[in-house]
Length: 112
Length: 112
Image (tube, rainbow over all chains, first blue to last red):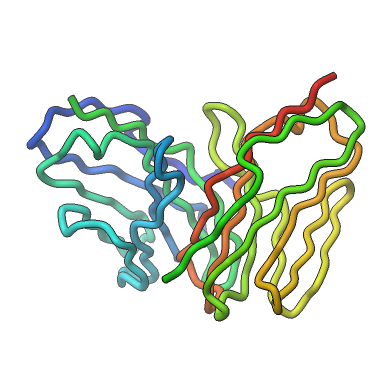
């Protein structure tokens, strides 16, 4: 099976812009979780989607949002970008609740 | 709130020695504890996990132990090899759901 894929791999934006990141889970996996990784804060949970519904949400401002489509692919959107949003954004998929999460390669977002 | 503390932040060992990384979690409802290995520029990869109904799990040179009373869990790597060099993250979740709370990571260096 193909692994989790994320697009784009690299992105450069300026403050105030918005961005959309995409994640395609492993075939058959229905749960997609998103994490932000930075040197200072480590890996922080953003949100989780299962069957097109947000099941869990982390402590991020409302500028961070996401959605999941019927084919389990997920997108996350960040509006009004700030310098502090520069990070590696990772998504992870799992078959269902209680199963192992497998990570994608991440999208490296740089906000100038 | 939910928190996972991980120690040490850096660990240097000689090839063939053992390495131990320790984590403490705050939420007593946590019941799933995975460990991830992240090499430089790569995605986190699941190396072993343990559920709250088990006290110990082993997979070749890697073992994880869980003490629910003390809310501690540890990763043990025996006969370390240079290719074990990476950043290791512990995590915890409750209801075996998609929300993983990560420790800050341990940078393991195995010197030949």
